[in-house]
Structure formats: C-alpha cells, structure tokens
Image (cartoon, rainbow, N blue to C red; front, top):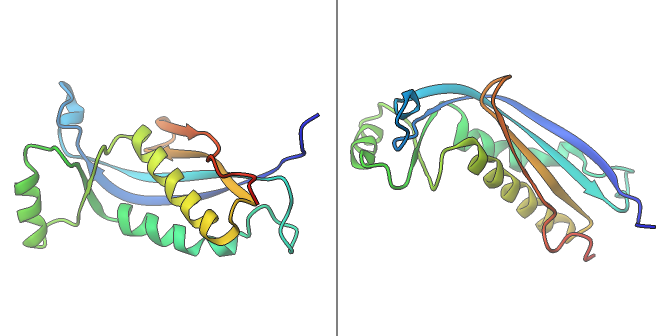
Length: 155
C-alpha cells in the first residue's frame, strides 16, 4: 500500500493578454487575446506545521510571476519572424512584450508548472509539489501539464 497523499488546488484567474501562433495556417496566426487563467494542483505526503499541503497565502511570488508575464502583455514565440517589429513596438510603448519558447497553452501549462515547483522546492525542499498545472484561454480551451518533479518526496 502506498503512502497517503494530501492534495489541494489553487486558481489564479483573469490575466488578459494576447499572442499569436505565427506558424498556424488558420486564424490563430493573427494577434488575438484571451483572459488566461491558471489552476495548480499540489500534493504532499505530510502536511506542514499549519496542517496545509500548501499555504495559499505563501503563493504571492507565483501570483507576481503570473502577473508579470500575462497581465496586459503580448506573447510571441522566440522564433517569430516579426520579433524585431514586436520589439520595436515594445520600445515605443505600444505593447508590453514577453518572448517565450512557445506561447501555446500546452507549453504555457508546463512553464507555470515549472515556476510553481521552483518556488516549492526553494521553500520546502521536497515536502510538497505541484503535480498538475492547467493553463486556460477561456472556459472552453484549456491545456494541462501533469507530472511529479523528480525531487518530490525527497525530504
């Protein structure tokens, strides 16, 4: 029989931003926007001193990272052929540019999963982890990244 696992989740909602998928043959190649939202699922085999898997009030650094990258920003892929133009518009103050490897929701789910686990590792050294992250464009479109980090349970 495996060890017991406690879980909880935390949602962060309403990060209006825009992006484009320049390789897409359809309408996704055009600049378009969503109000992105994120849900994080956390796990621990033992609770902290307060009886929590994760103290949600301690997730301020994660919220700030989400805000910095997704609140009223324009996301483009690092290999976007118009990158120099987007950078010029950023310098002119016309947009708040963020350059990512991949702006798609699947890659974004993995990116924010990595951010959450970096924070948890730094703070708890393996007591808890983020085992699943959801990146949502709207109520109908969402992507997930799900795995436990290699270090989980090592404390």
